[in-house]
Image 1 (cartoon, helix red, strand yellow):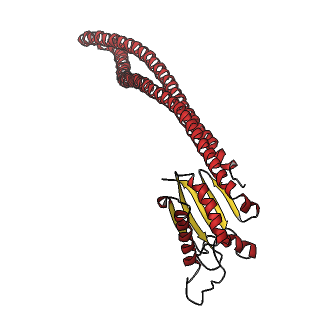
Image 2 (cartoon, one colour):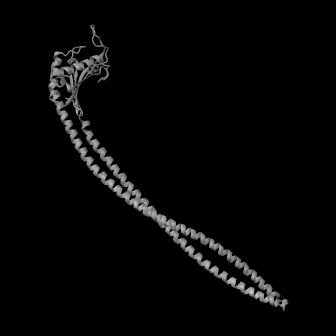
Image 3 (tube, one colour):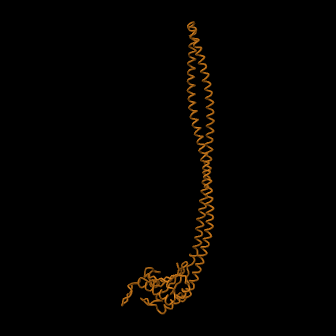
Length: 354
């Protein structure tokens, strides 16, 4: 007997490993997304702390400037008082000028100079006051902006935490769902694998019965039985079945088809496709007409074999179909006599019925 089972049996295991690896990769990807979201949250907390420190620094600068402004305002008020006093003194001196102009001239000049100096200082103080007020305005605007930024950052942080919490819950739910689906998939894969293994074992047993019926031909190299998943094929040398260039079944072919039919009759759930093939040697057309080529001859032989299995072996015709492939599906190269002989064959494909 000739079996091809190893590679087919390994397919369920490979499928199981592939699906498990995909589920594991999906779980790893979800965990990575959670870690990225937590890292972003930590970065926002650090930024919020830095903004808070900047606001505290601005408050300290504002307090210092306000202290300086109060000091300058006091100095300005004192200067204004001195100006008023000097103005009063100037008036008194003006009244006394008429009585003693020469005596008070130097004193008046000194007072005027002092007045001019005080006026200049007052002007400088006013300018400094205006500058401080402008700085105060700028600092106030920056403080307000920092306050707004702080509120915005706080709101963004709250929104981010809420979003992170929601996304974490969603991810945990997806993770739980994925784990549950993985467990379910594993069970389904195991169940499917067991069913597949049972089907393959059943096909092997059915194929074994057919091989037993053809043991003599298989030992002589005239027949071959091969499994292909849940199907198997019976390959027969067409020279053992048909007369040369004809669709007429020989006595030896009838005995062979009778044994094959008996084995296949025990498999009522299987569909049977009878295929006929040939080599590519020049076709010899009969003197009295007949078939025009290998294609027509193989189609007729497949039909004749299917009809014989129905009429003589009692197989249900609803299970049977026939196909002729001529020289177009060679089993081996046609460049040697052995290859051409192998290509002249009758194949019965035994497969599960749809």
